[in-house]
Image 1 (cartoon, rainbow, N blue to C red):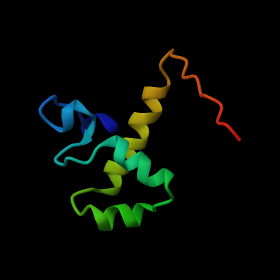
Image 2: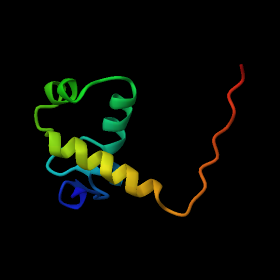
Image 3: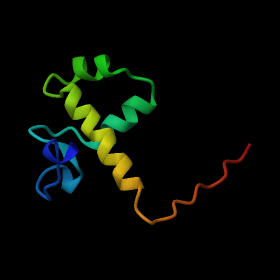
Image 4: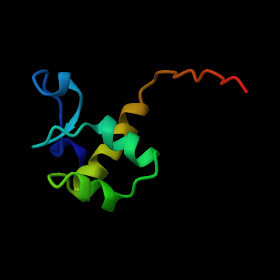
Length: 78
């Protein structure tokens, strides 16, 4: 699904994956959702973004994390 909605081009946002037809990066969508914004808030703030674009960004991120790479998470100081 995400393949038709997510695109990467070195001349757009330094090659970061974006929702097609926008300059909205997958990274931005993930950051806003992680901060507690709802789909509705994202859509209101970014009129060119669609619900399908948000879902595609999530699917893209999930697939990217399936790679056989270990992502060490540093322990935070208390």
